[in-house]
Amino acid sequence: MKSKRKTCLSLLLILILCLLLFGLYLFFRPDTIDPSANIILDPSSSYWEGPLEEAAQEEQSGIRIPGYSTLHFPADQSTVKMTLYNPEKNDCYFSFSLYLNDETVPLYTSDYVRPGMAIHELELARPLSSGEYTLHIRINTYDPQTMATRNSASVKTELIVE
Amino acid sequence: MKKTATCLLALTLCFCTAMSTTVFAADFDQNSTATPSTAITFDYKEQPVTPNEPSYIIVIPDTIELTEEGTALCIEAENVQDLGDQRISVTIAGTDKYRNQMVLEGKAATAPVNQSLRYQLIAADGTIIETTGGKDQVNGVELASFTEDGEVVYTMKPVITAANKKDVVYTGSIFFNIELVSAEDTVE
Image (cartoon, rainbow over the protein chains, first blue to last red):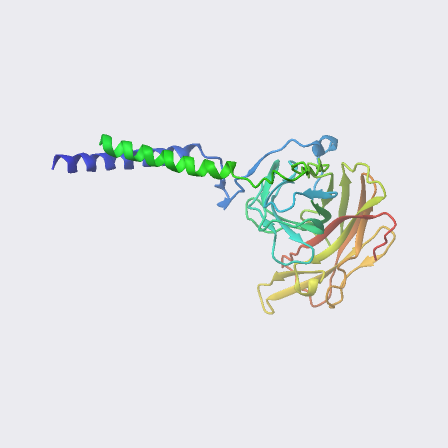
Protein backbone atom coordinates (compact mmCIF):
# COMPACT_ATOMS: atom_id res chain seq x y z
CA MET A 1 0.00 0.00 0.00
CA LYS A 2 2.77 2.38 0.95
CA SER A 3 4.76 1.54 -2.20
CA LYS A 4 1.67 2.19 -4.36
CA ARG A 5 1.26 5.57 -2.75
CA LYS A 6 4.92 6.32 -3.38
CA THR A 7 4.58 5.34 -7.05
CA CYS A 8 1.53 7.57 -7.52
CA LEU A 9 3.31 10.43 -5.88
CA SER A 10 6.35 9.98 -8.11
CA LEU A 11 4.21 9.91 -11.23
CA LEU A 12 2.39 13.02 -10.11
CA LEU A 13 5.65 14.84 -9.50
CA ILE A 14 6.92 13.82 -12.94
CA LEU A 15 3.69 15.07 -14.54
CA ILE A 16 3.94 18.41 -12.75
CA LEU A 17 7.57 18.74 -13.81
CA CYS A 18 6.66 18.03 -17.44
CA LEU A 19 3.87 20.59 -17.35
CA LEU A 20 6.23 23.14 -15.82
CA LEU A 21 8.86 22.54 -18.49
CA PHE A 22 6.23 22.82 -21.22
CA GLY A 23 5.02 26.07 -19.74
CA LEU A 24 8.55 27.45 -19.68
CA TYR A 25 8.98 26.41 -23.32
CA LEU A 26 5.80 28.22 -24.35
CA PHE A 27 6.94 31.33 -22.49
CA PHE A 28 10.46 31.50 -23.86
CA ARG A 29 9.96 30.10 -27.39
CA PRO A 30 10.70 32.33 -30.37
CA ASP A 31 7.87 34.50 -31.60
CA THR A 32 6.40 32.35 -34.36
CA ILE A 33 2.83 33.52 -34.38
CA ASP A 34 1.78 36.93 -35.53
CA PRO A 35 -1.16 37.77 -33.25
CA SER A 36 -2.49 40.52 -35.48
CA ALA A 37 -2.98 38.26 -38.49
CA ASN A 38 -3.16 34.89 -36.69
CA ILE A 39 -0.68 33.33 -39.08
CA ILE A 40 2.37 31.18 -38.57
CA LEU A 41 5.67 32.90 -39.21
CA ASP A 42 8.55 30.73 -40.28
CA PRO A 43 10.30 29.70 -37.05
CA SER A 44 13.66 29.34 -38.82
CA SER A 45 13.72 32.99 -39.90
CA SER A 46 15.94 35.51 -38.15
CA TYR A 47 17.03 39.10 -38.59
CA TRP A 48 19.61 39.53 -41.34
CA GLU A 49 21.68 42.60 -41.91
CA GLY A 50 22.96 41.72 -45.33
CA PRO A 51 24.76 44.18 -47.61
CA LEU A 52 21.78 44.78 -49.87
CA GLU A 53 20.14 47.54 -47.84
CA GLU A 54 23.20 49.78 -47.64
CA ALA A 55 22.67 51.46 -50.98
CA ALA A 56 18.98 52.21 -50.45
CA GLN A 57 19.02 55.81 -49.30
CA GLU A 58 15.49 56.99 -49.91
CA GLU A 59 12.10 55.64 -48.96
CA GLN A 60 10.68 54.14 -52.13
CA SER A 61 7.34 52.50 -52.59
CA GLY A 62 7.06 49.06 -54.12
CA ILE A 63 8.01 45.54 -53.13
CA ARG A 64 11.71 44.77 -52.98
CA ILE A 65 12.37 41.33 -54.46
CA PRO A 66 15.81 39.83 -53.83
CA GLY A 67 17.50 38.42 -56.91
CA TYR A 68 20.11 35.67 -57.06
CA SER A 69 22.97 34.78 -59.32
CA THR A 70 24.17 31.17 -59.63
CA LEU A 71 23.47 29.11 -56.52
CA HIS A 72 25.45 26.14 -55.21
CA PHE A 73 23.95 23.25 -53.25
CA PRO A 74 25.79 20.19 -51.93
CA ALA A 75 24.89 16.92 -53.61
CA ASP A 76 22.89 14.22 -51.82
CA GLN A 77 21.99 16.46 -48.89
CA SER A 78 18.52 17.63 -47.91
CA THR A 79 19.74 20.45 -45.69
CA VAL A 80 21.23 23.34 -47.64
CA LYS A 81 22.32 26.87 -46.80
CA MET A 82 20.63 29.68 -48.69
CA THR A 83 19.42 33.10 -47.61
CA LEU A 84 15.76 33.72 -48.39
CA TYR A 85 15.35 37.34 -47.42
CA ASN A 86 12.44 39.77 -47.08
CA PRO A 87 14.05 43.24 -47.31
CA GLU A 88 13.45 45.44 -44.31
CA LYS A 89 11.86 48.30 -46.24
CA ASN A 90 9.03 46.07 -47.50
CA ASP A 91 5.57 46.44 -46.06
CA CYS A 92 4.40 42.90 -46.71
CA TYR A 93 5.05 39.32 -45.70
CA PHE A 94 6.86 36.93 -48.00
CA SER A 95 6.48 33.23 -48.50
CA PHE A 96 9.05 31.37 -50.56
CA SER A 97 8.69 28.26 -52.72
CA LEU A 98 11.49 26.65 -54.70
CA TYR A 99 10.79 24.73 -57.90
CA LEU A 100 13.28 22.75 -59.92
CA ASN A 101 13.26 23.00 -63.73
CA ASP A 102 9.64 22.52 -64.90
CA GLU A 103 8.46 20.61 -61.85
CA THR A 104 5.14 21.64 -60.33
CA VAL A 105 5.76 20.15 -56.88
CA PRO A 106 7.87 22.52 -54.80
CA LEU A 107 11.27 21.44 -53.58
CA TYR A 108 10.83 23.69 -50.58
CA THR A 109 8.11 25.89 -49.11
CA SER A 110 8.44 28.36 -46.26
CA ASP A 111 6.00 29.87 -43.83
CA TYR A 112 5.57 33.64 -43.76
CA VAL A 113 8.66 35.81 -43.38
CA ARG A 114 8.46 39.33 -41.95
CA PRO A 115 10.36 42.30 -43.38
CA GLY A 116 13.98 42.33 -42.23
CA MET A 117 13.95 38.59 -41.58
CA ALA A 118 15.65 35.83 -43.53
CA ILE A 119 15.78 32.06 -43.62
CA HIS A 120 19.32 30.75 -43.82
CA GLU A 121 18.95 26.99 -43.82
CA LEU A 122 16.47 25.04 -45.92
CA GLU A 123 15.23 21.48 -45.57
CA LEU A 124 14.58 20.32 -49.12
CA ALA A 125 11.86 17.80 -49.93
CA ARG A 126 14.56 15.52 -51.31
CA PRO A 127 18.34 15.55 -51.74
CA LEU A 128 19.58 16.48 -55.21
CA SER A 129 22.02 14.61 -57.42
CA SER A 130 25.01 16.38 -58.90
CA GLY A 131 24.23 18.45 -61.93
CA GLU A 132 23.05 21.78 -63.21
CA TYR A 133 19.45 22.81 -62.80
CA THR A 134 17.17 25.78 -63.29
CA LEU A 135 15.74 26.95 -59.98
CA HIS A 136 12.60 29.06 -59.73
CA ILE A 137 12.28 30.96 -56.45
CA ARG A 138 8.63 31.88 -56.20
CA ILE A 139 8.00 34.80 -53.85
CA ASN A 140 4.40 35.42 -52.87
CA THR A 141 3.65 38.63 -51.01
CA TYR A 142 0.85 39.38 -48.57
CA ASP A 143 -0.66 42.37 -46.83
CA PRO A 144 0.36 41.97 -43.15
CA GLN A 145 -3.06 43.00 -41.82
CA THR A 146 -5.48 41.29 -44.21
CA MET A 147 -3.17 38.64 -45.75
CA ALA A 148 -4.53 39.69 -49.14
CA THR A 149 -2.14 38.71 -51.91
CA ARG A 150 -0.15 41.45 -53.58
CA ASN A 151 1.99 41.43 -56.69
CA SER A 152 4.35 38.47 -56.66
CA ALA A 153 7.52 37.46 -58.44
CA SER A 154 9.46 34.44 -59.54
CA VAL A 155 13.24 34.67 -59.60
CA LYS A 156 14.83 32.26 -62.03
CA THR A 157 18.44 31.29 -61.57
CA GLU A 158 20.97 28.56 -62.25
CA LEU A 159 21.57 25.95 -59.57
CA ILE A 160 24.76 23.90 -59.48
CA VAL A 161 24.70 20.79 -57.29
CA GLU A 162 28.06 19.16 -56.61
CA MET B 1 24.62 -11.93 -6.97
CA LYS B 2 28.40 -12.26 -7.05
CA LYS B 3 28.15 -15.42 -9.15
CA THR B 4 25.87 -13.65 -11.63
CA ALA B 5 28.23 -10.68 -11.92
CA THR B 6 31.21 -12.94 -12.38
CA CYS B 7 29.46 -14.91 -15.13
CA LEU B 8 28.45 -11.73 -16.90
CA LEU B 9 31.99 -10.37 -16.73
CA ALA B 10 33.39 -13.58 -18.11
CA LEU B 11 30.90 -13.60 -20.96
CA THR B 12 31.75 -9.99 -21.80
CA LEU B 13 35.45 -10.75 -21.89
CA CYS B 14 34.82 -13.72 -24.14
CA PHE B 15 32.72 -11.64 -26.48
CA CYS B 16 35.32 -8.88 -26.71
CA THR B 17 38.08 -11.32 -27.34
CA ALA B 18 36.11 -12.96 -30.15
CA MET B 19 35.43 -9.60 -31.84
CA SER B 20 39.02 -8.46 -31.52
CA THR B 21 40.24 -11.67 -33.09
CA THR B 22 38.60 -10.84 -36.41
CA VAL B 23 40.44 -7.50 -36.53
CA PHE B 24 43.79 -9.21 -36.53
CA ALA B 25 42.77 -11.89 -38.99
CA ALA B 26 44.30 -11.37 -42.42
CA ASP B 27 45.43 -13.39 -45.36
CA PHE B 28 49.14 -13.23 -45.89
CA ASP B 29 51.10 -15.32 -48.27
CA GLN B 30 54.59 -15.50 -46.82
CA ASN B 31 55.92 -16.71 -50.16
CA SER B 32 54.72 -13.71 -52.08
CA THR B 33 57.34 -11.21 -53.22
CA ALA B 34 54.83 -8.39 -53.70
CA THR B 35 54.99 -5.64 -51.13
CA PRO B 36 51.71 -5.41 -49.23
CA SER B 37 50.23 -2.02 -49.71
CA THR B 38 47.05 -0.13 -49.37
CA ALA B 39 45.94 2.26 -52.03
CA ILE B 40 44.91 5.62 -50.65
CA THR B 41 42.97 8.18 -52.63
CA PHE B 42 41.84 11.65 -51.65
CA ASP B 43 39.67 13.56 -54.06
CA TYR B 44 40.50 17.11 -53.07
CA LYS B 45 37.70 19.19 -54.62
CA GLU B 46 37.41 22.89 -54.49
CA GLN B 47 34.29 23.49 -52.39
CA PRO B 48 31.99 26.25 -53.50
CA VAL B 49 32.24 29.24 -51.18
CA THR B 50 29.22 31.16 -52.44
CA PRO B 51 26.97 31.96 -49.51
CA ASN B 52 23.87 31.66 -51.69
CA GLU B 53 22.77 35.15 -50.73
CA PRO B 54 20.81 37.67 -52.79
CA SER B 55 23.03 39.71 -55.09
CA TYR B 56 20.60 42.40 -56.29
CA ILE B 57 17.12 43.75 -55.64
CA ILE B 58 14.30 44.44 -58.08
CA VAL B 59 11.53 46.72 -56.88
CA ILE B 60 8.15 45.83 -58.36
CA PRO B 61 4.90 47.73 -57.86
CA ASP B 62 3.13 46.99 -54.61
CA THR B 63 -0.43 48.16 -54.93
CA ILE B 64 -1.53 50.59 -57.59
CA GLU B 65 -4.58 52.79 -57.39
CA LEU B 66 -5.59 53.25 -60.98
CA THR B 67 -6.99 56.51 -62.19
CA GLU B 68 -8.76 57.14 -65.47
CA GLU B 69 -5.81 59.18 -66.69
CA GLY B 70 -3.36 56.42 -65.79
CA THR B 71 -0.93 55.71 -62.95
CA ALA B 72 2.83 55.28 -63.04
CA LEU B 73 4.15 51.73 -62.67
CA CYS B 74 7.85 51.68 -61.77
CA ILE B 75 10.27 48.79 -61.90
CA GLU B 76 13.64 49.50 -60.30
CA ALA B 77 16.94 47.73 -59.84
CA GLU B 78 19.01 48.29 -56.69
CA ASN B 79 22.35 47.05 -55.43
CA VAL B 80 23.26 45.67 -58.84
CA GLN B 81 26.87 44.51 -58.74
CA ASP B 82 29.10 43.42 -61.56
CA LEU B 83 26.96 41.17 -63.75
CA GLY B 84 29.68 40.36 -66.24
CA ASP B 85 28.12 39.45 -69.56
CA GLN B 86 24.65 39.15 -68.05
CA ARG B 87 21.71 41.46 -67.51
CA ILE B 88 18.68 41.38 -65.25
CA SER B 89 15.50 40.77 -67.23
CA VAL B 90 12.08 41.50 -65.71
CA THR B 91 9.20 39.95 -67.64
CA ILE B 92 5.52 39.32 -67.08
CA ALA B 93 5.05 35.82 -65.71
CA GLY B 94 1.27 36.07 -65.65
CA THR B 95 -1.65 37.57 -63.77
CA ASP B 96 -4.08 36.23 -61.22
CA LYS B 97 -6.91 36.20 -63.73
CA TYR B 98 -8.26 33.56 -66.11
CA ARG B 99 -5.88 32.87 -69.01
CA ASN B 100 -3.44 35.36 -67.48
CA GLN B 101 -5.36 38.27 -68.89
CA MET B 102 -4.58 41.84 -67.94
CA VAL B 103 -7.92 42.56 -66.29
CA LEU B 104 -9.16 43.72 -62.94
CA GLU B 105 -12.29 42.26 -61.37
CA GLY B 106 -14.85 43.56 -58.93
CA LYS B 107 -18.35 43.08 -57.57
CA ALA B 108 -21.14 45.48 -58.40
CA ALA B 109 -24.09 46.21 -56.11
CA THR B 110 -26.56 45.46 -58.88
CA ALA B 111 -26.69 42.89 -61.65
CA PRO B 112 -24.59 41.98 -63.45
CA VAL B 113 -22.59 41.62 -60.27
CA ASN B 114 -19.33 40.30 -61.73
CA GLN B 115 -17.44 43.10 -63.37
CA SER B 116 -14.11 43.08 -65.19
CA LEU B 117 -12.01 45.90 -66.51
CA ARG B 118 -9.06 45.66 -68.91
CA TYR B 119 -5.93 47.69 -68.41
CA GLN B 120 -2.88 48.53 -70.48
CA LEU B 121 0.78 49.14 -69.78
CA ILE B 122 2.08 52.01 -71.92
CA ALA B 123 5.85 52.35 -72.25
CA ALA B 124 7.68 55.65 -72.44
CA ASP B 125 8.03 55.21 -76.20
CA GLY B 126 4.28 54.65 -76.60
CA THR B 127 4.40 50.84 -76.91
CA ILE B 128 1.21 49.31 -75.52
CA ILE B 129 1.16 46.00 -73.66
CA GLU B 130 -2.32 44.52 -73.22
CA THR B 131 -4.37 41.36 -73.57
CA THR B 132 -7.44 40.97 -75.73
CA GLY B 133 -8.91 37.73 -74.41
CA GLY B 134 -6.33 35.23 -75.60
CA LYS B 135 -4.40 32.84 -73.33
CA ASP B 136 -1.01 33.87 -71.97
CA GLN B 137 -0.80 36.73 -74.46
CA VAL B 138 1.69 38.77 -72.47
CA ASN B 139 3.54 36.01 -70.60
CA GLY B 140 7.23 36.46 -71.27
CA VAL B 141 6.93 40.07 -72.42
CA GLU B 142 9.96 41.93 -71.12
CA LEU B 143 9.16 45.01 -69.09
CA ALA B 144 12.65 46.03 -68.00
CA SER B 145 16.30 45.18 -68.49
CA PHE B 146 19.11 46.27 -66.18
CA THR B 147 22.87 46.03 -66.17
CA GLU B 148 23.15 48.53 -63.31
CA ASP B 149 20.89 50.35 -60.86
CA GLY B 150 18.07 52.03 -62.68
CA GLU B 151 14.36 52.51 -63.19
CA VAL B 152 11.84 51.83 -65.95
CA VAL B 153 8.44 53.55 -65.85
CA TYR B 154 5.19 52.51 -67.51
CA THR B 155 1.80 54.15 -67.41
CA MET B 156 -0.91 51.78 -66.27
CA LYS B 157 -4.24 52.83 -67.71
CA PRO B 158 -7.73 51.29 -67.49
CA VAL B 159 -9.60 50.58 -70.70
CA ILE B 160 -13.04 51.89 -69.77
CA THR B 161 -16.02 50.97 -71.89
CA ALA B 162 -19.72 51.72 -71.63
CA ALA B 163 -20.24 48.27 -70.13
CA ASN B 164 -18.08 49.04 -67.08
CA LYS B 165 -20.09 49.98 -64.01
CA LYS B 166 -19.06 52.74 -61.67
CA ASP B 167 -18.80 52.49 -57.88
CA VAL B 168 -16.99 49.18 -58.19
CA VAL B 169 -13.59 48.43 -56.68
CA TYR B 170 -11.61 46.58 -59.32
CA THR B 171 -8.57 44.59 -58.17
CA GLY B 172 -5.93 42.35 -59.69
CA SER B 173 -2.32 41.21 -59.43
CA ILE B 174 0.61 40.80 -61.80
CA PHE B 175 3.31 38.17 -61.45
CA PHE B 176 6.78 39.17 -62.48
CA ASN B 177 9.62 36.93 -63.59
CA ILE B 178 13.13 38.06 -62.74
CA GLU B 179 16.25 36.39 -64.03
CA LEU B 180 19.79 36.89 -65.15
CA VAL B 181 20.15 36.34 -68.87
CA SER B 182 22.94 36.76 -71.33
CA ALA B 183 23.35 40.38 -72.26
CA GLU B 184 23.09 39.32 -75.90
CA ASP B 185 19.74 37.50 -75.48
CA THR B 186 16.69 39.44 -76.58
CA VAL B 187 13.21 38.82 -75.20
CA GLU B 188 10.03 39.87 -76.98
